[in-house]
Image 1 (cartoon, rainbow, N blue to C red):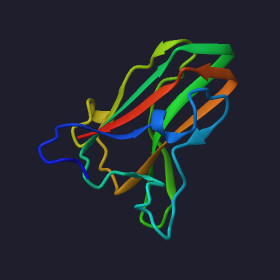
Image 2 (cartoon, one colour; image 1 turned 135 degrees about the vertical axis):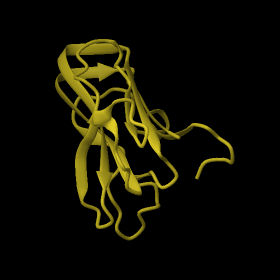
Image 3 (tube, rainbow, N blue to C red; image 1 turned 90 degrees about the horizontal axis):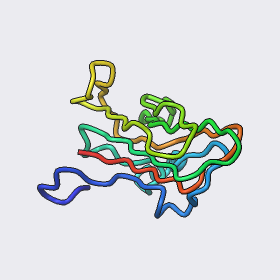
Length: 138
């Protein structure tokens, strides 16, 4: 839960996750835990109206196609993949931010968020290094 009067807060970041900053395959921020969904397996959206997905890559190897998504879970743990996604990232630099939620950013991005979600990614054809993925909520 965010601190009182905090306008934006970091929900999940790749940096402290222990997953590393080089990505060469598909992955995600964690699987659903039916026994304890609040054990930080999925990302907690219960206090969030809006999300901002920010992704930056400092290097590439070969010709990768890298895409980052926001997935959501229903109360039974069924995943609804890629309710929001970055464009394919094929080179170094920052991807265009992705905004979804009650305020959206564009009419196609208005989403009623369930209680739980996750960050997932796909990477084919190479690898990306120096990856920073941050999911912010407000």
